[in-house]
Image (tube, rainbow, N blue to C red):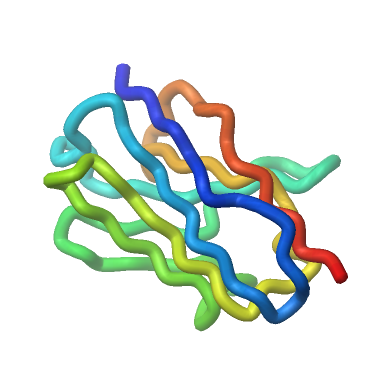
Length: 114
């Protein structure tokens, strides 16, 4: 079972940017689609961005045009560039397989507030 470690979160003002990183414990080449998820207080975890091995990306409507997902199979990493952040983006962010998530990591907290 592959493990994931997320980093890069923090406190940012509305309109700001953050770049999240996720490092896997082994190769992710065998995982067709990787995803970034988030869970806000009192809400269910949701998939906000996914990317296939071929680089095809899809986004939730709430983040489309503001977030960009990327992956580097050689480095076992997945990243999420977040721009024009809004208070409603506040959540704990996780990476995992997009189709059948395995064990969850600790996540990284993103707080958007003035």
